[in-house]
Image 1 (cartoon, one colour):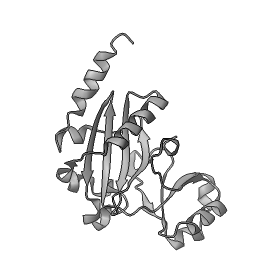
Image 2 (tube, rainbow, N blue to C red; image 1 turned 45 degrees about the horizontal axis):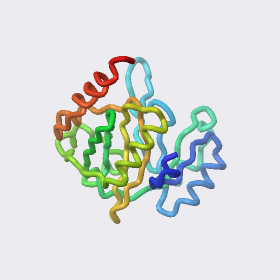
Image 3 (spheres, rainbow, N blue to C red; image 1 turned 90 degrees about the vertical axis):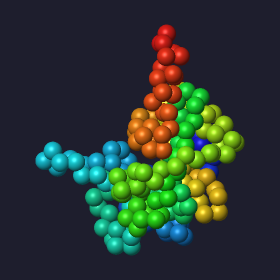
Image 4 (cartoon, rainbow, N blue to C red; image 1 turned 180 degrees about the vertical axis):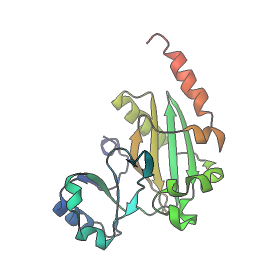
Amino acid sequence: MARSLGIETPQTLTTNNPLAVGEFVGECPQGAIVKMLSSFAIYEEDIEKVVFTNLVKPEDLEDLEGLRFCPMTFQELIPKALELRTTIAGQQIFTAAIDSQKSQKARYDWRRRGLALINDWQPYDLPQELSEKLLQLMDYFGLHYGAIDIILTPDDRHVFLEINPVGEFFWLDRCPGLPISQAISDTLLSHSSW
């Protein structure tokens, strides 16, 4: 749907087929990343172990047997100037940016260094045209709230990764101080007849 609205997206494959993964990665000249299909945490003996987005390495392709039990999402690797988190509540749009590339450990997923980078988030102004398309996407899915991940590439392209209808936001209320909680409250109150 994002593509049909003219929003740029990466090549993406969700599968449990090892052969399809090998083919897909071969078609990604800059490489590919892999992420969990559902929850990004695994629990072992009541201990949460987070599975971050990772680069697909050649040795990963040598043993994909476990993939048949746990489908994964693969995407072409998109070069990053900044990672953006856009939060939409009602018609209000808030975007913050982080330079995840300044930390080697956060290169593929800013969350890997989330606490260390928490004070580095800065407000960011999305292009008006992209903001309008994101609101259209929200309308299409009937969402009043969405947390959207976007990559700003070094050549200034905005590449949409995903929209999460229950994505986290509260750290952005605190730093850089975006009034997301208030916008959620306003949205709920404006629809109090639900």
